[in-house]
Image (cartoon, one colour):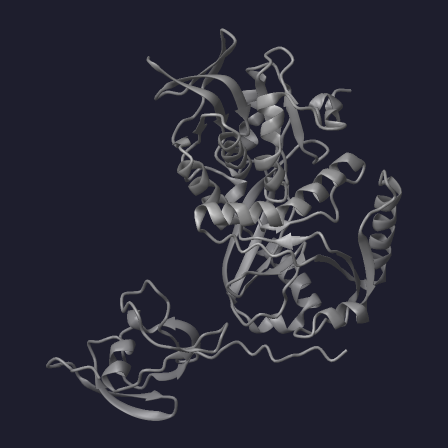
Amino acid sequence: MFKKLPQNGEKVSIDFEGKRLETVTGQTVAAALLGSGEMLFRESAVTGQPRSVYCMMGVCFECLLEIDGKPNQQSCMILVQEGMKIRRQQRPIMENHASA
Amino acid sequence: MNSIQTDTIVIGGGIIGVSLAYGLIKHGSSVILLDREDQNLTASRANFGLVWVQSKGYGMPRYAEWCIEATDHWPVFSESLEEETGSKLNYENTGGFEICLGEEELAARVKFIEDMRMQSRNGQYEVSMLSRDELQKMLPKIALGNDVSGASFCRHDGIVDPLNLLRTFYQGFQKRGGDYRPGHWVEDIQKDGSGFLVKTPKQHFRAQKLVIASGLATTKLSNMVGMAVPVSPQKGQVLVTERTSKLFPFATGGIRQNANGNFMFGASHEDTGIEIGTSTDILKVLVSRALRIFPVLENLQLVRTWAGLRVLTPDQKPVYCESEEFPGAFAVTSHSGVSLASLHSDKLPEWILEGKIFPDFDVFHPRRFNV
């Protein structure tokens, strides 16, 4: 979907949802994922609708991911690094329906 | 300095000031609304947004009745304000709980509700006690913690988005030609013929009527026109979580879920003077109580915390008064600017503009604080 400009960063590999992706440094995590064809970043915590990147400049908080175990990271503001373990941002688990 | 003339000057652009200003202009008065700077303290931008009745009016039954009248008017009022402005207030007449932990709290709540019923002048006080099981049945999507012993429930209670409410009043006020002047600290008020001269460093204003709704500055400004209205600050800290699905469509004193899915936890009561810092020890108390009520909320991340200052009279009840020395000057202050917004905008203008006397309105005069 996105066409990559010539990239001259170092080659690195990252882990996204258990998948190994080859990419290069000098770009954000969000850009690296989009460049690898990954569009679904998370689901809306309220409605469960799919969500992806929107502003790419740190304002809208749509691109949240879990990066190296830290939840709710703005992936458009974090540079990609060798070996990063990345997961989609999980909806909080609220399945604790009343049983009384 | 040249002065600008209008019918009514309202000093104070918080929720009380702007609800009055909007109401006054709707009742045919031209209005200038003088406000301080945006970054100055204002309870209107820090509060929890409850439209709340059930605990109000202890020791002053007229106030309890006033609150019920206000909440009963809220649906009509909010619909008309939304229609006029095209904005959403997210008002929901959900009914509200005060949730009790442990037997002692439950017993104290039962007694409080019984006292309120005894004090009520018509013997009717529409708050009922719910057992833990009854409460859980009303909350099919969220499990109660083990310590929850029961709750009081009042159908009049509800929730609104307090920031939308504030902004929407401004829209309504300006749409009707209201003159809003931020950055105008009032330095002096003088008698001016049969009206008043209000001085700020930037401009002088003249009007026949003057309404002081200036939060913590109410005491100082009211003094200039012969009214003694004591108010003092009380700090409340609040937390907000990330969003989640709709689990809890009700109001409570300490926990609410906003229209967009965030949970809010509030609010503490501290006498710290004029400062709005938050502190971990207090926030911890608020969160642990919320988690004892709804343990599943521990899966939510906190997004933000803040504090604001309540504006309280010595008995925490509202003040409505007209100056005896300078008729035409009014003071209005209340901790319940959101709950009472419906009456402040739709009813009080009749008192200010036409001298209408509401039954037993005199109980709200600040002479009750004189000993």
